[in-house]
Image (cartoon, rainbow, N blue to C red; front, top):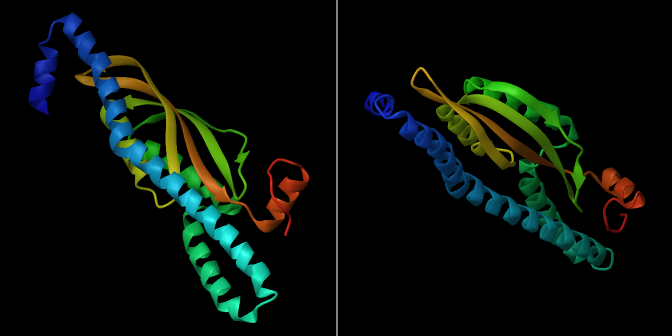
Length: 206
């Protein structure tokens, strides 16, 4: 690493600028292809699986009213459903989860410039909880933060990433990273009924 810093320090000013611009771009591309892309794919798969399981459970619940021998199948679907949605926090857990994300940024050495929760977006069975986040630090610190977020047990996606204002300070490349950090929470039956009544989501009340 010291050799790389020494090489960077000995570059001509024009080449230093090229490196200062290229490194954040490469960091962003690497994050997308190796962390964000696969995680978004897993998130979509989990959403689809939960929706399928909920629909199957509801269908079998209706069948159970007519066929008592389906009770065991419904119980098994409920068990699988509970296991799947453990990765989606409930409403009460959201503040702690967002606090954990903010702390990850600080633990990575970043200066948190903006951490602002935005209005939730609602889907049929879950809510999206987006947060505008702006941080500043070295590109190593930014990369470490994205990596830690990707390792959380809960589903958390980082999107709309922009890196700007690169500056070399004491042989370190500092930059500003703007992104949208989105987690998800499962809607309770009461919430779903209320949102259906308000026509914010589609569906039938239970």
